[in-house]
Image 1: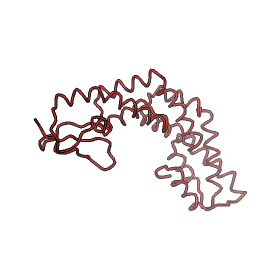
Image 2: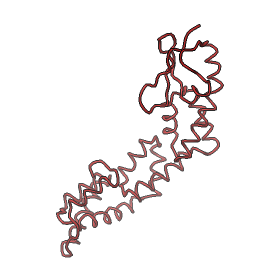
Image 3: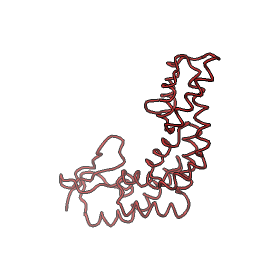
Image 4: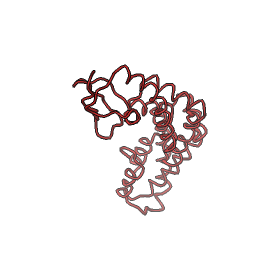
Length: 229
């Protein structure tokens, strides 16, 4: 009978475990499954028996893990699928788990998209273009993302949001139309919207003066976590 010679951690922080039988990698399983199965290195194991035990344990562990992840914060179908897969759960277990959580309403891409769209546009003050890209990175369908963005920041409202942000940026010492427009573009505002807002904002503040240096405003990059802004 083979010896479980090692329970290997593939990388620091990973919840995946690689079971090594007689010195050879056999299969990956989540750490929760290893604990539930009470596996220990340097013990004899029956691979067939282990597979049967895993088939009973994995679905329950995957469900519990999924619920814990959702308790921390809401996630999209893609996010939850990716996390469970990274943990080492089998594809069929991941699929069944996510489907079940969707069925009971704990995972809802439409709800997730609406919430994220509001956060991106109203809290982080991103334009629709940048917000749409971030929604896509979370696995949100383009049509669903567009609907969520329409509710959070319509095409009409985007111009007003850009002008508000542009006025804030333009009031800083060292601001120029190109600098303001560049920041708006990086935040995902459409070129026409960004350029118009920057021009209007600079015209408004030219006679008022500026109260903060442009260099100080660069600290926003660390504050909002946006690359290059």
